Length: 517
Image (cartoon, rainbow, N blue to C red; front, side, top):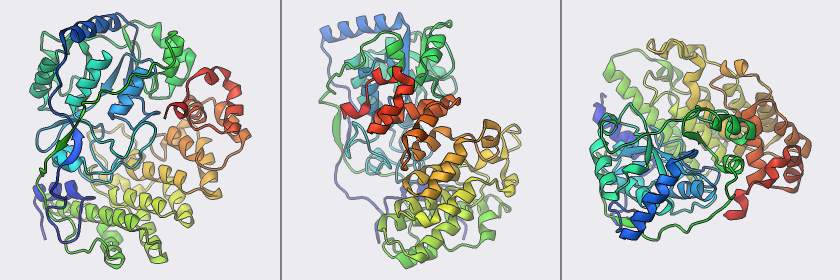
């Protein structure tokens, strides 16, 4: 059976929303979302905002990447608000357009890493996006925290006199973004803009961009190193960009925490609307463990066969998505049996190859997350074996346009999922594997995938580790390991972690996210 490209995309878009016997796949009732029209602003409020923005633009400017994700999930209004509360001047945001033309904020090209959906933002209506569940809700976020609209962010930004770096993730949004900036009277707030998808905005005479002093301090957790922050601030330019504003605020002598209540008028109900919808179950009962196990049943040849024309590869993509969906449903059902565990382990060990990165390894990553959700600690040896080896068959899907990309990086999706799963599967074997990974030098880590030190630290610190083991992380010469461990100790404190933090005593003066939830 051959599927058209639109069918494949629609199939991807609605996974995670499936209910038996329904092609609409969602309840036909309004759902709580965010505003699409800006609230009114008084003349005095507008005047005060422009004055404050002018002060911020004078610098030095601290921009927080996707919001302060130590306090709430990235690209949420709560994360943006926290960035400002803890001393930032503005935020980098990631606009995308939904299937029904709503500009929302979401970084990833695919939904499955951060939500229980599959596909991309552009394949779902905003109504459908609002019904997806986040994989992680923490800090100041709640179960009601959804994917925000650009309009709601601009309303929040007006309240905080927030500067903005706009990273438009796809073309075709410039006119709508410009309209919203006009409506909000916020062109002076825009200090940064990506060049790939924002040509019309770059040419707009209303925009006055500023320059960054240094590359992103978030890339190796330099933002948790006071000396690195000081050095960056001394370089030419007006701005620094980082993931966490607390150290920069301390270096600049700013108050550690100045909370401002969130505006009350950012939420709105959204009526039913849908993208192009197809029934993803393909006859499989999503509540039948036996049927879902059969949906996972696919021989290795089908998983690694990258030959055939475009239509053949479209059919393979549908199969990969179906297996990913089945793994998610097995995790949702929560019926952990030997057969289910073995089927999921097989899918991890035999994740599918695909030349389109949007599908490659997706089924294996979903299976790894499902094993974690089921608490399958007996599967840790399988997960570790896949994590610590590079499949030579990846050579079949290398892209000649990127000859300098290591082959091992192609398995980033499944290996990231495994690294995170090891944190949820608390056992001695997980702890040993994570400890061993953190001892790898960068060259060795790159042979497995791009280095994942931060994820490894977060997963290790979900295990039971001693004060001495925490101190070893805090003393690591690797800045990413050290910085991540500092934030974990600070924001998820125990008496042992607080005692261990004395080896970096300056960090004890920083505010903890745990105190403000």
